[in-house]
Image (cartoon, rainbow, N blue to C red; front, side, top):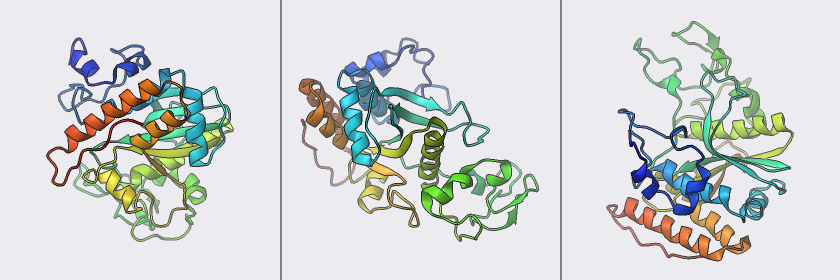
Length: 294
């Protein structure tokens, strides 16, 4: 463990430090040896704190989140409360291990579920992986099948475990839960985006607010999420438009520059993010430095 968090602090934009109330209790991402990963230059958690931690403590917070809300098609209206590494303790989706998202922003009329990516792809469903018993709990299709791990028959192994994704999927993705889908429409890293989209829907219903799911990403052609955004593949092929709204960190900072009052702060954050992207991509072929400033 990094005892004094010095390396972590040095890797976080200085203005974001105030967003972390207790550094020893904050839910840091850790590696297999229990070391905090946020000291690494390519840390996804660190760049998320850079941007959304700075927004959380900024005097420009409400006007910036109002502008982001309007951009993604939900109602503006503050005050906005921002929680970093928010966990669904209400277990709205019935998950045994509730989803944790990088940031949740809640205003008076809307909630934004924000998943952040840097150099890594999205997460995949574990049910198609080989379990400890050497079997797959799902065959990769959404079709009637028996989970060999628990003997439950269902089209989705997660539904068979009382996880409620498919209660929200019909509305969010316009998919019929009563027919087969081959392969499962949420194969690969589409699974993580689906989870965030249905969580946003569940939060909206629970809190009586409009809701939206955002994919915040570092924009560079060598990064997986950025490539998917450019190819229009952030949403599943059958999804309704707007199930997940991709927005780059540079776009967020541009919004801050446009509507915020602390121009110097957002210029500094822009340069900080540019430098991080440059460091992470510097060994990639064809890298080109991105411009600084608003």
